[in-house]
Image (cartoon, rainbow, N blue to C red; front, side, top):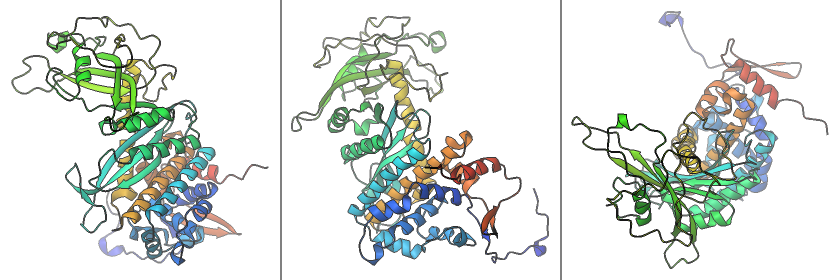
Length: 514
């Protein structure tokens, strides 16, 4: 591909008042208007004083800029160019919006969280955003440290990653038929403990998920940082299922001192075959164990006890150096879950009563209030099954429980990546409350774009938001008017013209008669 003109035959001029660079915002903001974004913002967000006036217009301006890819307050000026004033009203300048954000306190951020929850419920009614949530919903909890630059930012500190940043705590809701949406967020200091305020956020996430239509079973998933009795007890009390990765990934069950019950369960796995890997590649070997286990907090917090299943899995370590493999090595992983066990487990080639490894003394059993019965071991999960297969909520065998845990890393981590590629590329303000408000609005914009993608057709329902923005939002168009009718003149032979037309006509369809 080469330029068609010489250097002297090309010039530029910014003087066309009828051009816009983000024509897809017409459909996105029409959907936000149908969901009542501006009205809800004016009703729920009350800052007081002249700065808090017209909160609906200012929040809509921020959401439109974030949907177009703005990652700072000054970047919001991209919604004020060319023919944008002819397509939208109430656009505010970045300086006005910046003053509005800097007026926020943490109480006002809570108002934004309520606005985001209300808008998600309305988007779920207007679009198939949470299709299948009445059967099973997956609630993922995780935190992420976003690096910031400049010690003048409130709350910035060095955390466990060793970088100066702010800590983002979030909860997402996923169904078998859709992509995750954000149901709760919270901004914390960069050196905040992973477990801090997670129980209150999980409680709010459960309420938001129920209000959005997730009336079926809710499975809360988290990593080892959220393996605390307070959170697990609260989730069990509120009717949610729990699936947590425990902090017990170890190589030798005889020597790791961190968790006695997990080591004992690992020791009761059948003895590994010492023969070379190419002679023991049997997918039906019982490399899992399922037994009762109790998690509890110290005695100063009585009542935070939950007895459930402890799953331990053994995987082969295949990393080798130039010397090769002298003997087989294994790594053990443990997962704690209160998923109801299946009434029957799939049959395996070896029974679960195989003699335990004699290298681990088996003189004691796990101390639980339930009988420490050994469940039959299961086969390896079928990797040919699609990742969106919805399990039977009447009972979860060991392989299904492991598959649900393995899918966790493909949900909320992708949401963090999409936010980092958009409005959360960095936190724009030096004030902590302003950055917390920016985080809440970024989550609201994420849900709005997810609902827009559901209306764009099956090809975009599960695509990344960066791809959606590039194909259907960042499109140059010329605004023309004829007989009081506005027409957007879009590029000819646009590869995704059909999807854009489908999205536009779906959102701008006339309302149904009452």
